[in-house]
Image (cartoon, rainbow, N blue to C red; front, side):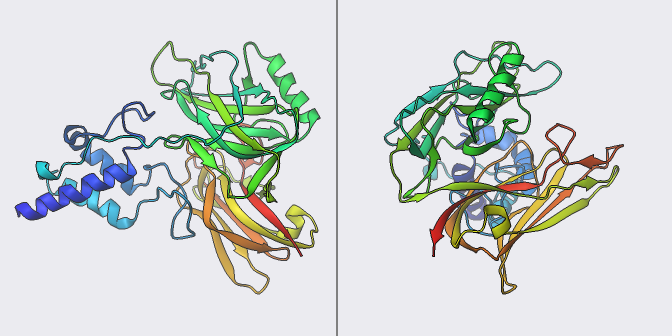
Length: 394
């Protein structure tokens, strides 16, 4: 009846407002807007397919595993709401209950202290591919040792910026290696599919719909004085021949924090994915002690970031406690290389030194004619997670 149709329209538009318009609005970097009835109704079937397959919204970690800050994981009832509205004939609803025009929430970093940017606007190379991965070595001009406690990423051309990761080289020699890569290629920066290609840790990350980020209160990542950093950009072809980008990064560097934030890698290093395998799983268990060293204390896990390459299908990381009980850290039922995030836990997870992390990655190599193993290249694979932790001494 009319009441149910209007109710379906009401529920659908509130779901789209909460979950979609942050990216699909004017000035944001989604390829089209979803701010009006006409825009949404013409794409109704495609929207249903996108949310039911979980291609959209861009969020890979299932809420059934753990709870994360700012989760964009759709509840099944939200998916049902959109599908039921389309199946009902996409009713327009009651004009009297129309939502006000969408206004993006201003998302800016409080009290930034440093700014770095790509030196010259970079025109991505899309010859033969719709994607370009480029790394730029930049100097934040940090005069004294400090801690990064927050950041903001400002792409100058959001239409072509797919995502970016800010890497902190682990040493002066790693910086020298990045500079050597830069010098070996024409123009600014160097090609860097997958990661920065030097020994480094992730300092910050950005993807559509996010702009600034705060590390957990009282924590920060150590940034040595004078240490350059690497901005890795993933550009995606917008169809504009004159596209160029000069992304800026704002950092808040503070002299002291209550707890230093450390990053570690949990890795399944020996991959052997058979050619032609449609669903092949690799698994490993690594103790916390082995991964972080023999420290007399415990860790609190604040953030986790899964990573595989293009054969990835799914990933799961589980904390296995010494008593045999388990805590799900992250479950990615549908991997997408183009959407890689770090996921901050709503409540930090306690990790004892004798606990283990079980890491499981599943791949689809059905179109490969040769076995696939661990490596940095496009045709290689990985199975790992980054983990950001604080340390509590006994």
